[in-house]
Length: 243
Length: 264
Image 1 (cartoon, rainbow over the protein chains, first blue to last red):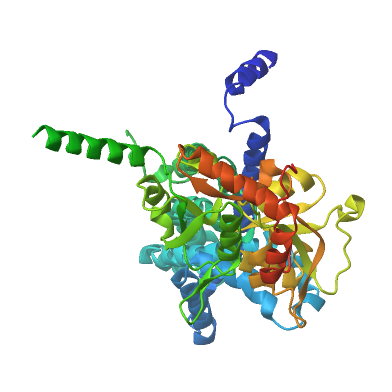
Image 2: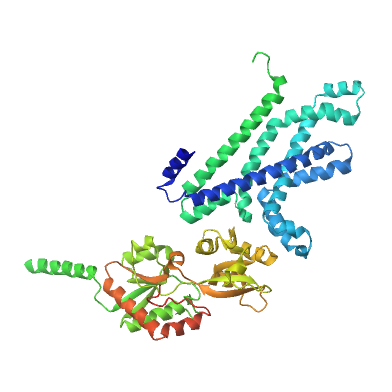
Protein backbone atom coordinates (compact mmCIF):
# COMPACT_ATOMS: atom_id res chain seq x y z
CA UNK A 1 0.00 0.00 0.00
CA UNK A 2 2.78 2.33 1.00
CA UNK A 3 4.64 1.56 -2.19
CA UNK A 4 1.51 2.21 -4.19
CA UNK A 5 1.08 5.50 -2.43
CA UNK A 6 4.65 6.54 -3.13
CA UNK A 7 4.27 5.52 -6.76
CA UNK A 8 1.09 7.56 -6.99
CA UNK A 9 2.69 10.66 -5.47
CA UNK A 10 5.61 10.27 -7.85
CA UNK A 11 3.24 9.97 -10.79
CA UNK A 12 1.39 13.12 -9.85
CA UNK A 13 4.46 15.13 -8.87
CA UNK A 14 5.06 17.01 -12.11
CA UNK A 15 1.64 17.82 -13.39
CA UNK A 16 -0.35 20.90 -12.55
CA UNK A 17 -3.86 19.65 -13.30
CA UNK A 18 -4.36 16.27 -11.62
CA UNK A 19 -3.45 17.22 -8.10
CA UNK A 20 -4.96 15.51 -5.08
CA UNK A 21 -7.38 18.43 -4.96
CA UNK A 22 -8.82 18.02 -8.46
CA UNK A 23 -8.84 14.22 -8.14
CA UNK A 24 -10.99 14.83 -5.07
CA UNK A 25 -13.48 16.67 -7.28
CA UNK A 26 -13.55 13.73 -9.69
CA UNK A 27 -14.04 11.31 -6.80
CA UNK A 28 -16.96 13.32 -5.41
CA UNK A 29 -18.31 13.51 -8.95
CA UNK A 30 -18.08 9.74 -9.30
CA UNK A 31 -20.04 9.42 -6.05
CA UNK A 32 -22.84 11.72 -7.24
CA UNK A 33 -23.07 10.10 -10.66
CA UNK A 34 -23.25 6.57 -9.28
CA UNK A 35 -25.77 7.55 -6.59
CA UNK A 36 -27.96 9.43 -9.06
CA UNK A 37 -27.92 6.75 -11.76
CA UNK A 38 -28.30 3.81 -9.36
CA UNK A 39 -31.22 5.32 -7.45
CA UNK A 40 -33.07 6.43 -10.57
CA UNK A 41 -32.61 3.00 -12.18
CA UNK A 42 -33.83 1.11 -9.12
CA UNK A 43 -36.88 3.33 -8.57
CA UNK A 44 -37.53 3.40 -12.33
CA UNK A 45 -37.46 -0.39 -12.47
CA UNK A 46 -39.86 -0.73 -9.55
CA UNK A 47 -42.25 1.69 -11.26
CA UNK A 48 -41.87 0.13 -14.69
CA UNK A 49 -42.89 -3.45 -13.88
CA UNK A 50 -46.51 -2.73 -12.83
CA UNK A 51 -46.77 -0.04 -15.51
CA UNK A 52 -45.66 -2.50 -18.19
CA UNK A 53 -48.28 -5.03 -17.07
CA UNK A 54 -50.99 -2.36 -16.94
CA UNK A 55 -49.88 -1.03 -20.31
CA UNK A 56 -50.98 -4.34 -21.81
CA UNK A 57 -54.38 -4.13 -20.16
CA UNK A 58 -57.49 -4.34 -22.31
CA UNK A 59 -59.16 -1.49 -20.42
CA UNK A 60 -58.67 1.79 -22.28
CA UNK A 61 -58.67 4.02 -19.20
CA UNK A 62 -55.67 2.08 -17.84
CA UNK A 63 -53.85 1.56 -21.12
CA UNK A 64 -54.02 5.05 -22.63
CA UNK A 65 -52.76 7.20 -19.73
CA UNK A 66 -49.70 4.96 -19.43
CA UNK A 67 -49.10 5.12 -23.15
CA UNK A 68 -49.43 8.90 -22.95
CA UNK A 69 -46.88 9.04 -20.12
CA UNK A 70 -44.30 6.88 -21.92
CA UNK A 71 -44.93 8.76 -25.15
CA UNK A 72 -44.30 12.16 -23.56
CA UNK A 73 -41.18 11.10 -21.67
CA UNK A 74 -39.70 9.21 -24.59
CA UNK A 75 -40.69 11.92 -27.03
CA UNK A 76 -38.96 14.85 -25.33
CA UNK A 77 -35.27 15.35 -24.52
CA UNK A 78 -34.22 14.49 -21.00
CA UNK A 79 -32.51 17.88 -20.78
CA UNK A 80 -35.84 19.65 -21.32
CA UNK A 81 -37.51 17.47 -18.69
CA UNK A 82 -34.73 18.33 -16.26
CA UNK A 83 -35.07 22.05 -16.98
CA UNK A 84 -38.82 21.88 -16.44
CA UNK A 85 -38.55 20.03 -13.16
CA UNK A 86 -35.66 22.11 -11.81
CA UNK A 87 -36.28 25.65 -13.10
CA UNK A 88 -39.93 25.33 -14.15
CA UNK A 89 -41.53 24.29 -10.87
CA UNK A 90 -40.01 27.31 -9.16
CA UNK A 91 -42.49 29.51 -10.97
CA UNK A 92 -45.51 27.73 -9.56
CA UNK A 93 -47.02 30.26 -7.19
CA UNK A 94 -46.46 29.45 -3.53
CA UNK A 95 -44.49 26.26 -4.06
CA UNK A 96 -41.86 27.49 -1.61
CA UNK A 97 -44.41 27.26 1.23
CA UNK A 98 -45.36 23.64 0.63
CA UNK A 99 -43.59 20.53 1.92
CA UNK A 100 -42.55 19.82 -1.67
CA UNK A 101 -40.01 22.63 -1.51
CA UNK A 102 -37.84 20.69 0.94
CA UNK A 103 -37.37 18.15 -1.85
CA UNK A 104 -37.21 20.52 -4.81
CA UNK A 105 -34.85 23.03 -3.20
CA UNK A 106 -31.82 20.79 -3.50
CA UNK A 107 -30.62 20.13 -7.05
CA UNK A 108 -30.28 16.39 -6.42
CA UNK A 109 -33.96 15.50 -6.08
CA UNK A 110 -35.28 17.33 -9.16
CA UNK A 111 -32.58 15.54 -11.15
CA UNK A 112 -33.48 12.23 -9.54
CA UNK A 113 -37.18 12.76 -10.35
CA UNK A 114 -36.44 13.65 -13.98
CA UNK A 115 -34.08 10.70 -14.47
CA UNK A 116 -36.44 8.27 -12.74
CA UNK A 117 -39.49 9.28 -14.76
CA UNK A 118 -37.45 9.11 -17.95
CA UNK A 119 -35.94 5.69 -17.37
CA UNK A 120 -39.28 4.33 -16.06
CA UNK A 121 -40.91 5.36 -19.36
CA UNK A 122 -38.29 3.55 -21.46
CA UNK A 123 -38.22 0.51 -19.19
CA UNK A 124 -42.01 0.27 -19.29
CA UNK A 125 -41.89 0.06 -23.07
CA UNK A 126 -39.05 -2.48 -23.03
CA UNK A 127 -40.95 -4.76 -20.64
CA UNK A 128 -44.24 -4.23 -22.42
CA UNK A 129 -42.64 -5.37 -25.66
CA UNK A 130 -41.12 -8.39 -23.93
CA UNK A 131 -44.47 -9.36 -22.39
CA UNK A 132 -46.19 -9.02 -25.74
CA UNK A 133 -43.61 -11.29 -27.33
CA UNK A 134 -44.45 -14.20 -25.04
CA UNK A 135 -45.04 -17.24 -27.31
CA UNK A 136 -48.74 -18.11 -27.65
CA UNK A 137 -48.00 -21.74 -26.88
CA UNK A 138 -46.76 -20.94 -23.36
CA UNK A 139 -49.92 -19.01 -22.58
CA UNK A 140 -52.17 -21.71 -24.00
CA UNK A 141 -50.32 -24.34 -21.98
CA UNK A 142 -50.75 -22.27 -18.83
CA UNK A 143 -54.46 -21.92 -19.54
CA UNK A 144 -54.74 -25.65 -20.13
CA UNK A 145 -53.34 -26.14 -16.63
CA UNK A 146 -56.14 -23.91 -15.34
CA UNK A 147 -53.90 -21.08 -14.10
CA UNK A 148 -55.54 -17.78 -13.19
CA UNK A 149 -54.32 -14.63 -14.97
CA UNK A 150 -52.30 -13.54 -11.93
CA UNK A 151 -50.65 -16.91 -11.49
CA UNK A 152 -49.92 -17.11 -15.21
CA UNK A 153 -48.37 -13.65 -15.11
CA UNK A 154 -46.23 -14.54 -12.11
CA UNK A 155 -45.12 -18.02 -13.12
CA UNK A 156 -45.06 -17.99 -16.90
CA UNK A 157 -45.11 -14.58 -18.52
CA UNK A 158 -42.94 -12.39 -16.26
CA UNK A 159 -39.98 -14.76 -15.84
CA UNK A 160 -39.62 -15.29 -19.57
CA UNK A 161 -40.33 -11.61 -20.34
CA UNK A 162 -37.55 -10.54 -17.92
CA UNK A 163 -35.12 -12.78 -19.71
CA UNK A 164 -36.11 -11.48 -23.11
CA UNK A 165 -35.88 -7.88 -21.92
CA UNK A 166 -32.44 -8.28 -20.37
CA UNK A 167 -30.21 -7.26 -23.34
CA UNK A 168 -32.39 -4.24 -24.15
CA UNK A 169 -32.52 -3.24 -20.49
CA UNK A 170 -28.72 -3.48 -20.28
CA UNK A 171 -28.55 -0.86 -23.02
CA UNK A 172 -31.02 1.33 -21.15
CA UNK A 173 -28.76 1.21 -18.06
CA UNK A 174 -25.77 2.34 -20.11
CA UNK A 175 -27.80 5.08 -21.80
CA UNK A 176 -28.91 6.26 -18.39
CA UNK A 177 -25.32 6.48 -17.19
CA UNK A 178 -24.41 8.60 -20.20
CA UNK A 179 -27.56 10.70 -19.97
CA UNK A 180 -26.67 11.56 -16.38
CA UNK A 181 -23.89 13.77 -17.78
CA UNK A 182 -26.46 16.56 -18.10
CA UNK A 183 -26.93 16.71 -14.30
CA UNK A 184 -24.22 19.35 -14.16
CA UNK A 185 -26.47 21.91 -15.87
CA UNK A 186 -28.49 22.11 -12.66
CA UNK A 187 -25.29 22.62 -10.62
CA UNK A 188 -24.86 19.01 -9.49
CA UNK A 189 -21.15 18.23 -9.23
CA UNK A 190 -21.32 14.87 -10.99
CA UNK A 191 -18.45 13.44 -13.06
CA UNK A 192 -19.14 15.81 -15.95
CA UNK A 193 -19.57 18.71 -13.51
CA UNK A 194 -16.14 17.94 -12.07
CA UNK A 195 -14.66 17.79 -15.57
CA UNK A 196 -16.23 21.11 -16.54
CA UNK A 197 -14.90 22.65 -13.36
CA UNK A 198 -11.37 21.42 -14.01
CA UNK A 199 -11.63 22.52 -17.64
CA UNK A 200 -12.77 26.01 -16.68
CA UNK A 201 -10.03 26.29 -14.11
CA UNK A 202 -7.05 25.11 -16.16
CA UNK A 203 -8.33 25.74 -19.70
CA UNK A 204 -7.28 22.19 -20.51
CA UNK A 205 -10.21 20.56 -22.29
CA UNK A 206 -8.31 17.48 -23.42
CA UNK A 207 -6.98 16.55 -20.01
CA UNK A 208 -10.20 17.28 -18.15
CA UNK A 209 -12.58 15.52 -20.55
CA UNK A 210 -10.37 12.60 -21.59
CA UNK A 211 -9.90 11.73 -17.95
CA UNK A 212 -13.62 11.80 -17.27
CA UNK A 213 -14.31 9.85 -20.47
CA UNK A 214 -11.98 7.14 -19.17
CA UNK A 215 -13.97 6.96 -15.92
CA UNK A 216 -17.25 6.64 -17.85
CA UNK A 217 -15.66 3.89 -19.93
CA UNK A 218 -14.73 1.98 -16.78
CA UNK A 219 -18.28 2.32 -15.44
CA UNK A 220 -19.75 1.20 -18.75
CA UNK A 221 -17.41 -1.76 -18.76
CA UNK A 222 -18.58 -2.77 -15.27
CA UNK A 223 -22.23 -2.56 -16.37
CA UNK A 224 -21.51 -4.56 -19.54
CA UNK A 225 -19.78 -7.23 -17.50
CA UNK A 226 -22.67 -7.45 -15.03
CA UNK A 227 -25.22 -7.90 -17.80
CA UNK A 228 -23.02 -10.35 -19.65
CA UNK A 229 -22.91 -12.41 -16.46
CA UNK A 230 -26.67 -12.16 -15.92
CA UNK A 231 -27.40 -13.12 -19.51
CA UNK A 232 -25.09 -16.11 -19.27
CA UNK A 233 -26.85 -17.30 -16.14
CA UNK A 234 -30.44 -16.52 -17.06
CA UNK A 235 -30.35 -17.30 -20.75
CA UNK A 236 -28.35 -20.51 -20.37
CA UNK A 237 -31.28 -22.51 -21.71
CA UNK A 238 -31.05 -20.75 -25.06
CA UNK A 239 -27.47 -21.76 -25.69
CA UNK A 240 -26.67 -24.80 -27.85
CA UNK A 241 -25.69 -27.75 -25.68
CA UNK A 242 -22.26 -28.25 -27.12
CA UNK A 243 -21.49 -24.62 -27.74
CA UNK B 1 21.89 60.45 -62.77
CA UNK B 2 23.94 60.73 -59.63
CA UNK B 3 21.56 63.32 -58.32
CA UNK B 4 18.59 61.08 -58.98
CA UNK B 5 20.26 58.20 -57.21
CA UNK B 6 21.04 60.41 -54.23
CA UNK B 7 17.45 61.61 -54.09
CA UNK B 8 16.13 58.07 -54.23
CA UNK B 9 18.53 57.03 -51.49
CA UNK B 10 17.48 59.99 -49.40
CA UNK B 11 13.88 59.00 -49.92
CA UNK B 12 14.57 55.47 -48.79
CA UNK B 13 16.44 56.69 -45.73
CA UNK B 14 13.66 59.07 -44.81
CA UNK B 15 10.99 56.39 -45.17
CA UNK B 16 13.17 54.15 -43.04
CA UNK B 17 13.43 56.73 -40.26
CA UNK B 18 9.70 57.38 -40.16
CA UNK B 19 9.17 53.65 -40.06
CA UNK B 20 11.44 53.37 -37.07
CA UNK B 21 9.86 55.78 -34.63
CA UNK B 22 7.05 58.24 -34.55
CA UNK B 23 8.37 61.73 -34.27
CA UNK B 24 5.23 63.80 -34.64
CA UNK B 25 2.86 64.86 -31.92
CA UNK B 26 -0.03 63.35 -33.74
CA UNK B 27 -1.38 60.20 -32.17
CA UNK B 28 -4.14 58.02 -33.56
CA UNK B 29 -6.10 56.13 -30.91
CA UNK B 30 -8.09 53.03 -31.84
CA UNK B 31 -11.36 52.20 -30.14
CA UNK B 32 -14.07 49.59 -30.67
CA UNK B 33 -17.47 51.30 -30.76
CA UNK B 34 -19.89 50.88 -29.02
CA UNK B 35 -19.27 49.66 -25.48
CA UNK B 36 -21.55 51.69 -23.27
CA UNK B 37 -20.89 53.68 -21.22
CA UNK B 38 -17.22 53.54 -22.14
CA UNK B 39 -17.83 54.60 -25.71
CA UNK B 40 -20.90 55.14 -27.88
CA UNK B 41 -22.19 57.34 -30.66
CA UNK B 42 -24.63 60.13 -30.04
CA UNK B 43 -27.56 60.47 -32.45
CA UNK B 44 -25.59 63.33 -34.01
CA UNK B 45 -22.76 60.94 -34.79
CA UNK B 46 -20.29 62.20 -32.18
CA UNK B 47 -18.18 59.75 -30.16
CA UNK B 48 -18.87 60.02 -26.48
CA UNK B 49 -18.23 58.04 -23.34
CA UNK B 50 -15.89 57.54 -20.45
CA UNK B 51 -12.95 56.33 -22.49
CA UNK B 52 -13.35 59.12 -25.03
CA UNK B 53 -13.27 61.74 -22.28
CA UNK B 54 -10.42 60.00 -20.52
CA UNK B 55 -8.42 59.61 -23.73
CA UNK B 56 -8.88 63.27 -24.67
CA UNK B 57 -7.84 64.33 -21.18
CA UNK B 58 -4.73 62.14 -21.30
CA UNK B 59 -3.74 63.58 -24.68
CA UNK B 60 -4.15 67.09 -23.36
CA UNK B 61 -1.85 66.32 -20.42
CA UNK B 62 0.75 64.71 -22.66
CA UNK B 63 0.60 67.60 -25.17
CA UNK B 64 -0.39 65.28 -27.96
CA UNK B 65 -2.74 65.87 -30.85
CA UNK B 66 -5.06 62.89 -30.75
CA UNK B 67 -7.56 61.59 -33.28
CA UNK B 68 -9.89 58.62 -32.77
CA UNK B 69 -9.99 55.68 -35.15
CA UNK B 70 -12.85 53.22 -35.05
CA UNK B 71 -11.73 49.63 -35.25
CA UNK B 72 -13.62 46.39 -34.66
CA UNK B 73 -12.29 44.25 -31.85
CA UNK B 74 -10.98 41.23 -33.76
CA UNK B 75 -8.60 43.33 -35.83
CA UNK B 76 -7.59 45.78 -33.19
CA UNK B 77 -4.13 44.37 -32.34
CA UNK B 78 -3.15 43.56 -35.96
CA UNK B 79 -4.20 47.13 -36.86
CA UNK B 80 -1.87 48.52 -34.21
CA UNK B 81 1.04 46.38 -35.37
CA UNK B 82 0.49 47.35 -39.00
CA UNK B 83 0.58 51.05 -38.02
CA UNK B 84 -3.01 51.93 -38.87
CA UNK B 85 -2.97 53.79 -35.53
CA UNK B 86 -0.50 54.32 -32.71
CA UNK B 87 -2.33 53.14 -29.62
CA UNK B 88 -5.41 51.25 -28.45
CA UNK B 89 -7.63 52.72 -25.79
CA UNK B 90 -10.54 50.31 -25.81
CA UNK B 91 -11.09 48.53 -22.50
CA UNK B 92 -8.37 46.03 -23.30
CA UNK B 93 -7.62 43.80 -20.33
CA UNK B 94 -3.97 43.00 -19.70
CA UNK B 95 -3.27 39.32 -20.34
CA UNK B 96 0.04 37.45 -20.70
CA UNK B 97 -0.84 36.49 -24.30
CA UNK B 98 -1.42 40.11 -25.30
CA UNK B 99 1.69 41.21 -23.42
CA UNK B 100 3.70 39.13 -25.87
CA UNK B 101 2.46 41.27 -28.75
CA UNK B 102 1.95 44.76 -27.42
CA UNK B 103 3.27 47.12 -24.78
CA UNK B 104 0.71 48.00 -22.12
CA UNK B 105 0.43 51.25 -20.19
CA UNK B 106 -0.35 51.13 -16.50
CA UNK B 107 -3.96 49.93 -16.09
CA UNK B 108 -6.59 52.63 -15.79
CA UNK B 109 -9.65 50.69 -14.68
CA UNK B 110 -10.99 47.32 -13.59
CA UNK B 111 -14.67 46.49 -13.14
CA UNK B 112 -15.45 45.34 -9.62
CA UNK B 113 -17.47 42.30 -8.58
CA UNK B 114 -20.28 42.49 -6.10
CA UNK B 115 -22.28 40.35 -3.66
CA UNK B 116 -26.00 40.13 -4.39
CA UNK B 117 -28.79 38.76 -2.25
CA UNK B 118 -32.57 38.99 -2.04
CA UNK B 119 -33.94 42.25 -0.77
CA UNK B 120 -35.69 40.59 2.17
CA UNK B 121 -32.53 38.87 3.39
CA UNK B 122 -30.16 40.32 5.96
CA UNK B 123 -26.71 38.88 5.38
CA UNK B 124 -23.48 40.36 6.67
CA UNK B 125 -20.82 39.38 4.17
CA UNK B 126 -17.94 40.45 6.41
CA UNK B 127 -18.99 38.04 9.17
CA UNK B 128 -17.46 34.77 8.01
CA UNK B 129 -19.00 32.68 10.80
CA UNK B 130 -22.51 33.74 9.85
CA UNK B 131 -21.85 32.70 6.24
CA UNK B 132 -21.21 29.10 7.23
CA UNK B 133 -23.48 26.80 5.22
CA UNK B 134 -25.06 29.50 3.05
CA UNK B 135 -25.16 28.84 -0.67
CA UNK B 136 -23.68 31.07 -3.37
CA UNK B 137 -24.27 30.93 -7.13
CA UNK B 138 -21.57 31.86 -9.64
CA UNK B 139 -20.96 31.39 -13.33
CA UNK B 140 -18.73 28.41 -13.87
CA UNK B 141 -15.13 29.17 -14.77
CA UNK B 142 -15.28 32.94 -14.30
CA UNK B 143 -12.94 34.91 -12.08
CA UNK B 144 -15.85 35.17 -9.61
CA UNK B 145 -15.88 31.37 -9.48
CA UNK B 146 -12.13 31.40 -8.72
CA UNK B 147 -12.62 34.04 -6.04
CA UNK B 148 -15.34 32.27 -4.05
CA UNK B 149 -13.61 28.91 -4.50
CA UNK B 150 -10.37 30.30 -3.16
CA UNK B 151 -11.72 32.58 -0.43
CA UNK B 152 -14.95 30.85 0.64
CA UNK B 153 -14.39 27.24 -0.43
CA UNK B 154 -14.68 25.99 3.15
CA UNK B 155 -17.45 28.36 4.24
CA UNK B 156 -20.00 28.66 1.48
CA UNK B 157 -21.78 25.97 -0.48
CA UNK B 158 -20.79 26.89 -4.06
CA UNK B 159 -23.20 26.22 -6.94
CA UNK B 160 -21.82 26.73 -10.46
CA UNK B 161 -24.13 27.74 -13.32
CA UNK B 162 -23.85 28.19 -17.05
CA UNK B 163 -25.50 31.61 -17.13
CA UNK B 164 -26.15 34.43 -14.72
CA UNK B 165 -29.87 34.31 -15.54
CA UNK B 166 -30.02 30.83 -14.01
CA UNK B 167 -28.33 32.22 -10.92
CA UNK B 168 -30.96 34.96 -10.72
CA UNK B 169 -33.78 32.39 -11.00
CA UNK B 170 -32.41 30.25 -8.19
CA UNK B 171 -31.68 33.27 -6.03
CA UNK B 172 -35.28 34.35 -6.57
CA UNK B 173 -36.72 30.92 -5.82
CA UNK B 174 -34.74 30.61 -2.59
CA UNK B 175 -32.37 27.85 -3.67
CA UNK B 176 -29.49 30.28 -3.29
CA UNK B 177 -28.68 32.74 -0.53
CA UNK B 178 -26.07 34.78 -2.40
CA UNK B 179 -24.57 35.50 -5.76
CA UNK B 180 -21.19 36.98 -6.61
CA UNK B 181 -21.25 38.74 -9.96
CA UNK B 182 -19.45 41.21 -12.17
CA UNK B 183 -20.86 44.65 -11.32
CA UNK B 184 -22.09 45.83 -14.76
CA UNK B 185 -23.43 42.32 -15.47
CA UNK B 186 -25.22 42.31 -12.11
CA UNK B 187 -26.89 45.59 -12.97
CA UNK B 188 -28.29 44.00 -16.13
CA UNK B 189 -29.25 40.64 -14.62
CA UNK B 190 -30.43 41.52 -11.12
CA UNK B 191 -31.50 45.14 -11.72
CA UNK B 192 -30.54 45.65 -8.10
CA UNK B 193 -30.45 49.41 -8.47
CA UNK B 194 -34.14 49.70 -9.39
CA UNK B 195 -36.52 50.48 -6.56
CA UNK B 196 -38.82 47.58 -7.37
CA UNK B 197 -35.99 45.07 -7.73
CA UNK B 198 -36.11 41.84 -5.73
CA UNK B 199 -32.37 42.00 -5.18
CA UNK B 200 -29.84 44.16 -3.42
CA UNK B 201 -26.10 44.55 -3.29
CA UNK B 202 -24.37 43.89 0.01
CA UNK B 203 -20.89 44.75 1.24
CA UNK B 204 -18.13 46.47 -0.68
CA UNK B 205 -17.38 46.00 -4.38
CA UNK B 206 -14.34 43.79 -4.85
CA UNK B 207 -11.50 43.90 -7.41
CA UNK B 208 -8.55 42.59 -5.44
CA UNK B 209 -6.41 40.44 -5.39
CA UNK B 210 -4.77 41.00 -8.77
CA UNK B 211 -3.89 37.28 -8.97
CA UNK B 212 -7.62 36.55 -9.43
CA UNK B 213 -9.18 39.69 -10.87
CA UNK B 214 -6.36 40.52 -13.27
CA UNK B 215 -4.43 43.73 -13.68
CA UNK B 216 -7.25 45.58 -15.35
CA UNK B 217 -7.71 47.40 -18.65
CA UNK B 218 -4.87 49.43 -20.12
CA UNK B 219 -3.80 51.25 -23.25
CA UNK B 220 -1.77 49.22 -25.74
CA UNK B 221 1.17 50.39 -27.85
CA UNK B 222 3.65 48.89 -30.26
CA UNK B 223 6.54 47.44 -28.31
CA UNK B 224 9.07 49.89 -29.67
CA UNK B 225 7.03 52.98 -28.75
CA UNK B 226 8.27 53.05 -25.19
CA UNK B 227 8.48 56.84 -25.07
CA UNK B 228 4.89 57.29 -26.12
CA UNK B 229 3.73 54.73 -23.54
CA UNK B 230 5.69 56.56 -20.85
CA UNK B 231 4.02 59.84 -21.79
CA UNK B 232 0.60 58.26 -21.32
CA UNK B 233 1.66 56.54 -18.10
CA UNK B 234 2.60 59.92 -16.70
CA UNK B 235 -0.72 61.37 -17.86
CA UNK B 236 -2.65 58.54 -16.20
CA UNK B 237 -0.76 59.15 -12.95
CA UNK B 238 -1.60 62.85 -13.23
CA UNK B 239 -5.35 62.41 -13.78
CA UNK B 240 -5.47 60.14 -10.76
CA UNK B 241 -3.42 62.48 -8.63
CA UNK B 242 -5.46 65.64 -9.18
CA UNK B 243 -8.92 64.03 -9.01
CA UNK B 244 -9.79 64.47 -12.69
CA UNK B 245 -10.18 60.71 -13.06
CA UNK B 246 -12.69 60.53 -10.24
CA UNK B 247 -14.66 63.42 -11.68
CA UNK B 248 -14.88 61.73 -15.08
CA UNK B 249 -15.73 58.38 -13.52
CA UNK B 250 -18.61 59.84 -11.53
CA UNK B 251 -20.01 61.30 -14.70
CA UNK B 252 -20.54 57.84 -16.18
CA UNK B 253 -20.58 55.34 -13.33
CA UNK B 254 -22.12 55.07 -9.91
CA UNK B 255 -19.55 52.51 -8.82
CA UNK B 256 -15.81 52.61 -8.38
CA UNK B 257 -13.71 51.16 -11.18
CA UNK B 258 -10.58 53.16 -10.48
CA UNK B 259 -7.24 51.48 -10.01
CA UNK B 260 -5.19 53.99 -8.04
CA UNK B 261 -1.62 53.94 -9.34
CA UNK B 262 0.87 52.02 -7.28
CA UNK B 263 -1.78 50.28 -5.20
CA UNK B 264 -1.48 46.53 -5.28
